[in-house]
Image 1 (cartoon, each protein chain N blue to C red):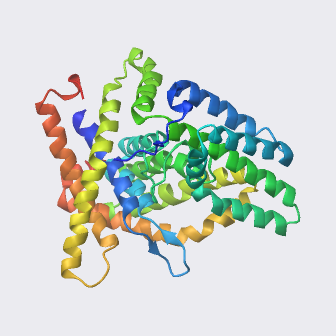
Image 2 (image 1 turned 180 degrees about the horizontal axis):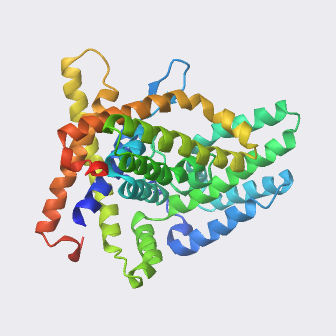
Length: 181
Length: 202
């Protein structure tokens, strides 16, 4: 109980710290932060349930007004902003990511984690994000999807990174990669 | 760690967190029922007035807090002007500003402790179902405490990278930062267990 709770809390802190790493700008001027990489790692490392709880804990603190989101943002306003869907989608994204890594036992960890991060952290997350933008900006789903596309290349890189970091962790701290423990 | 609570004292600071949250929830919901740009302009003016009650400085602070929103406001306006329907664009933009401004008002005038207390109170029925909520309070405290610690350690990693390489540190640091988080977690968990775990006060 204590160990699970502390790991969940420290991964929530990890999401915050990854948001503070300086932005990397992709070739065509779209800034990406490592924050969504943190969400993917919650799933690939902690597994479905704990990963979802870590992102939920992070969002709770953001809602309460801690400036933990990339760029020092926080507060309730974010949950009525156009990006609300991406935030709400985090726990589901981490859950799906973790579930895939846990269930795809036939696959080695590296491809399983990349696949999980791709399906959970991109497909599922964008579905939520696009619906959120469609509602708040009063756009059709297709139009909202267009607004989100510039960020896909960066997220593809992050999904691959999440896989490599997870498989490296499995070698460095095998007992802590709970999705495969 | 710095919270986003405003240091300008307003009358809202003395209101109960639960009342503010309920009022703002109703307000935001109502905003999504309105479509007329005229009424929505009135709503924005109302929200601005609510800020002004706290003084000019407080209003300026509130406007600065809306900074992440301007990007979307610009997109919506340009989009609808191009589509030949500027009035709808105006309505959507005004609604966004009013809703986010209203929600920020709670964040800016409520202390973190009060909000944490409110969350634990909302969750308290779970205790009756046999789900323990004490770990949630612990977990929130741990994140608040360990985000700066982990950030400090990440800074040390950045420094040692810079001491060895002329290139910029980037994604290569994600792995060691994650290892640091895991090691800290295992250590803290052990320390917690040694001190009686969640059965003691945080």
